[in-house]
Image 1 (tube, rainbow, N blue to C red):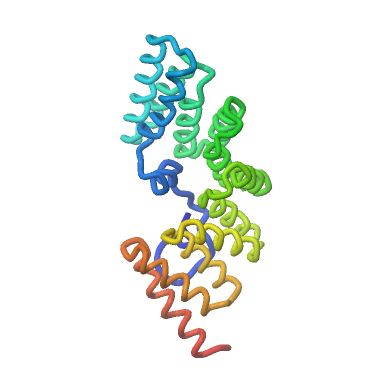
Image 2: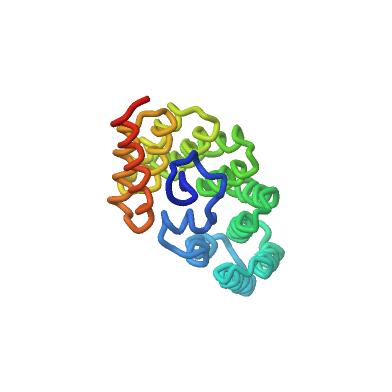
Length: 244
C-alpha cells in the first residue's frame, strides 16, 4: 500500500490498490502456486482420494500459471473446476478470491474469502485479504473488523496492523493509524511501506519533522521504490524553514 501515486507534491494515500498477490508475495516471498502448495501436507492427511488429489492440484497449478500470466479468466475457470472436484478445501477458493481481487471484482473476491473463512475459521490470511477487498469497496468498518480478527488470530502479523492502519488513515483517524503502523514497524523493522505510509500520516498531521524521518527511512530501506520521496522531503524541509 503506497501513500503516493507518483512523485511530489506529497499527497494523501492513493485509492489505487496493489495487486493482492503482490501484497502477499512481498511478505512471503513466494508465488501463488507455491502458496497453494503450503496446504499440501494437510491435504494429504485428511483422507483425500489419490486421483482426486492429483486432479485438484493440477487445476490449482494451472490456475496459478494463468494467474502469473495475468490471464485471469482462465485462472478463475481452473480454480472453479478445482472447487468442483474438492469443494471443502480452501486453496482454490482463496486463490480464486485473489484473482477476482486483481480483476477488481471485489464482491466476488469477498464471497470467496468468506467461503475460505467458513471452511477454515483460523485462516488469518483470508481475513487480511477480505479486509483489503472491503477497503476497496469503501466498507471501512468491515475492513477494520477483518484486520482486527486477523490480529486476534496472529498478534505478530505485521501486515494485519499495516492494513488496519491504512483504513484508519482513510477514515482520518490519524492516531489509531499511527499506532498500527508503529506496531507493524516494531514487528517488521524493514517494512519500507509502513514507514512511507506512517510518514504520510505525520504529513497530514503537519508533523513535518516526523514525516521527514519516516520518508528518509523508507528511502534507506528501499531506494529504488521510494527515491521520489527526496523531492517531498525537500518540500517539507522548506515548510519547516519558512512556516506560515
